[in-house]
Amino acid sequence: MLIESTTTLPRVSLPVFIALVFLIYSTLAFSWGHNGHSAVGVLAVEQLRPEVRKQLLQFMGSLDDEAMAKACNWPDEVRETKEWEWTYPLHYINIPRGDFQYLQSRDCPDQLCATEAIKRYATELGDVEASTEKRWQAFAWLCHLTGDLHQPLHAGFADDRGGNNYEVVFRDKQTNLHSLWDSKLIESRINSVPELIQLLGAVPESNVIEFWSPVLVNNWTNESHELAKQQVYPASIPIDEAYEAASWKLIQKRLNLSAIRLALIINSTLKKEQ
Image (tube, rainbow, N blue to C red; front, side, top):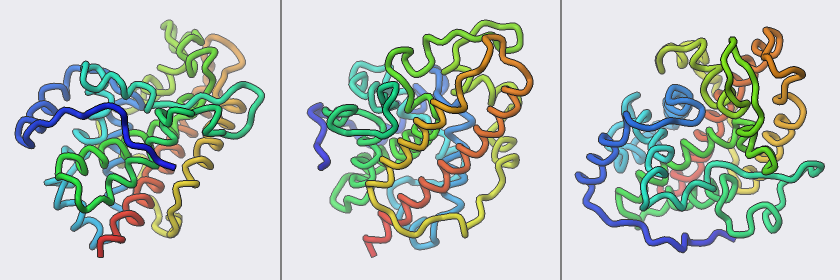
């Protein structure tokens, strides 16, 4: 069962709201990197049905690359503000070591985690009675959190804070495993969103599942958690070339899969308006 947030969201006019997005946009850090989250949005929009694109455009204003960059990175930016600091837990989900599957009653009892937030914002995206601002925000959260959930360490372990407390050395510089996966591996190879999109390429439409159900998000959570357990933690603190190459290959797969699944959510949710 989905719940409404216990936090009252601030009400501002749409022009002021968009202005705040521009103000914050270039000042803060991003998970998956700015390029990664932007690419997920752009690639997902490319997979939307024409009638769904038309519906989405009504409350997004634009579906171009710049609009995707703003929306899909917005949740990382606003969590630094007092009004949105309550959203920090929405960016990840922790599962205990030794457990293989997400259990909502144990892992997210307050429903403030990535898994439950994706379900909630999918519902809000399809709410035809909601304001333009609220539906814009719902898309932004869906784009961002679907990307976050497919970064394996966002479905990792609480005891090392999803790899934030796991120190590594990458190309002779000290960092942590979470940062390595969030951005450093991407930034070491990619300089721009168009470059990343070109590398990832258009996702074949045949790979898109037609049926959407919120329970799928539990499966995606388990999938990411298994990757965190089996493939993400390196054999040595200095990151070697073999690990770097394998991790970069997996990151590309995860970003593409994020776009596929984001498109699935949007196509399935907005088609109900017809």
